[in-house]
Image (cartoon, rainbow, N blue to C red):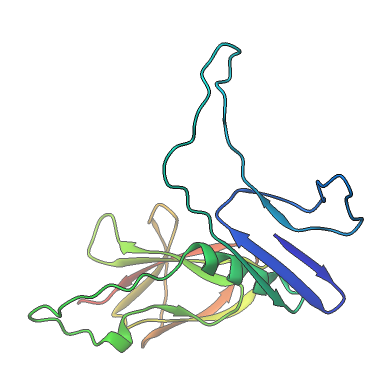
Length: 189
């Protein structure tokens, strides 16, 4: 949930689905009060049903940040709060050839987000989905971990739409506003 006024924005991020801005107290204030709302079922839906005691361990996280009044900054903060990075220790396997510095894809334009990296359904290529969360077209460069041998724009169901003639370890171009672009990338030949 984000509130902005003048030259400041405040974003509250949580995994709870419902937020409110109205002060529920008896002596309520007139200004907005940002709050996460936890919805619970404590009694069965029919009148003679049992009460639910809600036993167990319940963990709720909530983060608040201030920023310039820009929805893109709020979006990135909220997304990061709900998708924390987990550290994983791994012993490098025999024959592994990818250095750690080359282990991620990257997207240059603010407002774009890589939403999927997966093996293609029908071949050995990699499918990469990128979303433009902005309404306006964005110039974007997607950084690959190594040079691609083949590059195609495909539909969401991975049907080829266009072969792209780009060389090297990046995909450059414009992503139209509010659009999902899906690429099929071949690294082997």
